[in-house]
Length: 534
Image 1 (cartoon, rainbow, N blue to C red):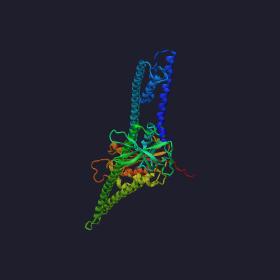
Image 2 (image 1 turned 90 degrees about the horizontal axis):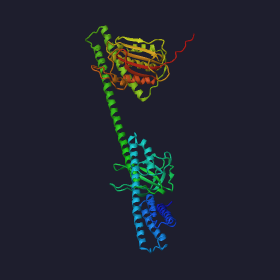
Image 3 (image 1 turned 180 degrees about the vertical axis):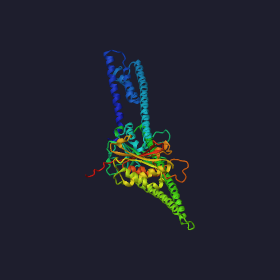
Image 4 (image 1 turned 60 degrees about the vertical axis):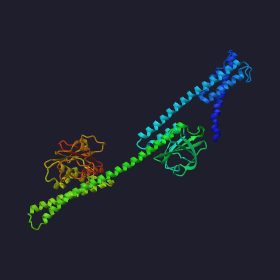
């Protein structure tokens, strides 16, 4: 369909409406004057004028009034079938018909135009509000665009709307109201030229090939019944993308209200894209800042915890090497035990660092097997004799408990870190207790029916504040304490406990214990003990 035919279609439609309305009014006047015998039925033409004004507007209504004047003069005024008027009083009737028809037509057409303008303004405001609300409430622009484009397609009478990034020749489609369909290769399209102030925007024909199809190199062809339109998305003078739209040629170019909706949508999409960019930059900066903070915390903690035992080891070793002092055998053993104790502290620190690195890299691969829980607990307590200094550790782990399915190295590190944490912060006179129950006798509700064993390590020390319990297993977190001195810790021991436990399919949590101190529950998978042969 060519452009000239599209331009003449509305005119032909209005002309047909005017002729039809005059024909019906003429028939009505003929019936009223010939059959009913009314002396003057010319006001019946005013019905045609009002009807055309309501349907088509002011100009067709005025033309209908003129046509009514000529029709009544030609058909019903003596001498008939001529435009001459014999009686002067008939001129008054005809002129009144013309004037009243024009006035009524203009008034009715104006009210129609106002009603249409109000309705169009309401649709425009609703469309703009919907676009703004969708962009404002969505987490990102990409998530909001499908709903925004569908709204634009409906409110601007487009057959398809999509958004591309970059310039007009951009190949990547960000969002499309017809997701998955190939976008056409467009050679000729109209670009919305926006004016400053309240001056209405206009469409400018551009003869520039723009391939906006899919990136797989198979664009579709633009149908001859469609026209292509583009609205650039500009942010601070830079073009960030475009809104593309296809529209049936029968509808003609978008009207003024539709232009405003498209322009406002382009501006809001641009601002939303800019918001995403700034948020991404802020997030990247925050990640860098937190990474630097973690590095600083790691260096501070590790350097402190390395320096303290190294100083003790050097002092003890220097004492033993003093040629001027002859140490008795008992005191020499005590100094050597002090060196061994501080070396063990260094070993645990290095182990925690290596374990944390493996946990964060996702490289933990447990070699699970069945072990008797009592043996694992006894081994962990025996390894910590140097740290416990003869402190009482009450073990209540029944031999009848089912074996646990764990990695021997991982569970040893878990028990060692929890016991070491209790020994370090519970106080020199606190009693540490280790107990265990099976899932059948546990009071907590487990997530599934898998048999479990829950190990509880608690003490009667001062405990920790309730608000600190959820963060005890966070990396580098340390409960603020007074009088810690040199043994403040790195904040990695319990973080390693959580990582190793979860790698074995278990869980760990901290709570206030029945003794008043801190209780740590380690839940592990249980298995069935193998039957011994007779």
